Length: 377
Ligand SMILES: Cc1ncc(COP(=O)(O)O)c(C=O)c1O
Image: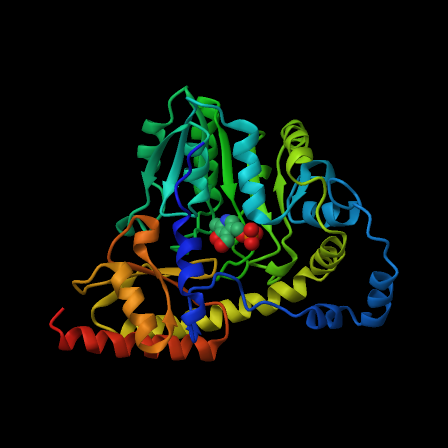
C-alpha cells in the first residue's frame, strides 16, 4: 500500500524546533491538567481517584460517561452511536479503513486536512476533488458537487469548520449537501473537530450525524476543548456503522487510555466553561489578525467564520515553501505553506494560541514582507 506524505505534519516536524513565534498551531491554547482539574473545584478528590485507579484496558469502546458526554454534543445520538478513538486522526483513518475498498469513488473537498483524500486514495479509491475557491468564500459549489455525485460515489468528505480556511457551512448548506449524498446513496463524512468553535455566538451548526442516517462525524478533544495531549477523539454515526468500525478497531487499538478517558470526561462535563474560554480566545485573536491583514496592502483573506486557522493570500513572487522557510529562519515565525494544501501563494496561520505570540508573529511576517519588497519581489 502506498500513501502520500502528510505534508502539514512533515512540515511541522521539520520546522517546529526553529519556531519562536509558532503561529502554525491549530489547537486553542492548550490547557494544563491543573487548570482542567481546578475548573471542577475537586482536584484532590480526582487526583486520589487517579492514584488508586488500576490500569487495566478499561471500557473497550470508551467509558459510558465519556461516550455519554460525547453523545451530548449531538442532537439525536446516544452512547451507542459513539466510538472513542485515539484522536480525530485515528477516527478519520478508521472510517476509511472500515468503508473504502479498491475502485470505490470518493469525493473530497480541497483545501482540507489531507487525511480526507490521501487515506481513501491509499486504499485504492478514485478520489475526485471538489475545489473550494476564495471567490466562493471557500464554501463548496453545490451545483458542481451535485454534478460530481454519481450513483457510484461511495463517500463524500467535507470538513466543517474548515482547516485551513476557517470557512463554515451553516445548517441550510449542510442540509443541501445531505440531499446530494442521499440522492446518490453515498456516505457523508464530515470532519467536525473544530465544530464548537464558531465566531458568531449562537450560530446553529449541526452535525451531519444528526442530519442523515449515512452521516458520519469525527470529533476530538484536541481543538475546541484544548486537550490535544489526551489523544481522545471519536466517531459518531449510525449504530451499524459504529459496530463495523469497532470490529476493525479491535485490531488497531483495543481501547484508549483510562486516564485520558477520565480527563476527557471531565472536559466534557465542563464543556460550557471551556468553550466560553476558547470562543473568547478565538474571537479576540481573530480581531488581532483582522487588523493586521487590513494593514498589509499585499495580503488578503476570506475572513474565517469558525475554527482556529485562516488561509492568507499574499501577492509576492515567491513560492509558499520558500516564503515560510525564509520567514522562520529570519525571525522564528512559523506558518504553514499553502503548498501543503496544493495551493500556492497562500499561508495557513493558526491564530488561537497566545495573543502575544500571535502579535509577535504578525510583526515577524511584516518584517519579512519589507525584506521581500527590498528584493523587488
Ligand atoms: C481537520 C482536522 N481533523 C483532524 C485532526 C486531528 O486531530 P487530533 O488527532 O488531535 O484529534 C486535525 C489536526 O490538526 C485537523 O485539523
